[in-house]
Image (tube, rainbow, N blue to C red; front, side):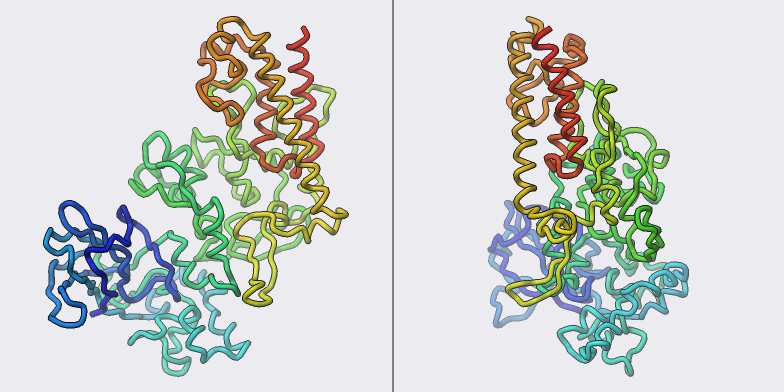
Amino acid sequence: MAVAAVGLGGSCLALAQEVPHWSIPQAGGMPGLPVMTGLEQRTNGVRVTWDGPPGYYHVFQRTNVHSGSWQAVTGPLLTRNATLPVGLDNAFFRVAGPAPRYAGAQACAECHEPMHHLTAHTGHAHALDTLKRIGQDKNPACLPCHTVGYGLPTGFISETATPHLAGVQCENCHGPAANHAANELDRAARPRAELAAQVCGGCHTDSHQPTWEEWKSSRHAVVTEDLNPPGRINSCGRCHSGSVRLALGKGRDPAVAVTNDANVPITCAVCHDPHGRHVWTNVLTGTVTTNQLRHPVASTNQYAMGTGGDFTAQYNPDINLCAQCHNDHGATWSGNARAPHHSPQYNMLLGTAGVLDAGFTPRAATHALQIGKQCVGCHMPTAPYQSEDQPAMTGHSFKVESFASCRDCHVFPELSTPFAMMSVANQIGQLKDALDLWATTRAPDTLRTKYGPRAWEYSIPGDLSPGGEGPTSVEQAQIPEAIRKARFNLYLVKYDGSYGTHNPRHTINLLEQARIWIQAELNP
């Protein structure tokens, strides 16, 4: 029987809500032992939460951490939480779970041969070999992340004694599976399929490989709104929920497949396929790469994934990995409900976003055609480990934290880029002021009286006009077409977020076209 750490019931060092996914990174991936994750006092008792591999758990308590016998306070539980009655709020607790029994990937292959064949050719399967190459294959600090179950009774001991547990295998991510292999019909013993980035974060971490820390600092790690409601799960969830995105990719209906589990951020497995390798030919360089990315890093096809309609009909696996979500979602100037989404980066890069008259020629950015890895080339800078004060950089914060790649083409990019971005930001401000001027001096009386400077806005105004609603869907017909086109261009540039860096010429054209349209309405 495996036992978790002890906690004091009276403390409130814990989660305010139940955590449905693995929440604490552990070296080696999914631990073989239960881990206490929280204690919370409630009016009806104490809420205890823990995590660990599949199986039955028991909660024990005693009032003195140093003496006395542990008393069982629950029967066997398949859940990983329990609310204990009032009276135990000053007790110490521990959780006991099934003893970890590891079988090795070959046991999994008896039923999962196709998956085993794919994973056998990934870098994970040869993780111990990487230690051997640097003479660290006997280092106990390294072995938990390069073998299966190291340090536990049935886990890896040595390549001689336990060769079947060498490398990173199925049980690193899914937990001990010998009980499942012995009786595949026992649902309680079935290994977990866990999407949480914490599973990867237990190993892909620290100053030598800070992938986990960088990802945690990114917006990919955040779910800002509840994505479970029926009106959001299949629309917003396409790009804002890891569980929804993966379900859609497998042809499943998220409303059924991930019921009450849509609030999963964009975790590692959304972009990286843990079970297989993919071969991609870069359309810009002709380079053929084999990796675990679900999509290529470069493409030049126009693409938009709308929030409505059939996902499969719109989905194109050959589109740039980032562009799968960072596209304009098919927004058009004629839409009046709300400003275009904060994600038109790919279409701005290609010069296909926005509205232009015949005098302007749309064109793809040099960045789109000459940076071989497109988005990755700038947003995922990497650097080797130098020291604890100068750790490695893996690029998973997705921030432009280095101008090194820019210097191949630009002189002093760290100076010129902020200057150019400031210029575009100023133009956005000037156009916004011009639209406000139209709204307060030229808009129809009914709109001007009711909405003031928001008379030019969408029904749900964008970030440029906080403080209230815009004209209703019926009232939108009173806004001239030129103003509606101008606001569309303005928001595309603002929500691209690069302030012209992605595609300078196209950005300038969109803003200049918007200026012409607004000026025409101000001076008819």
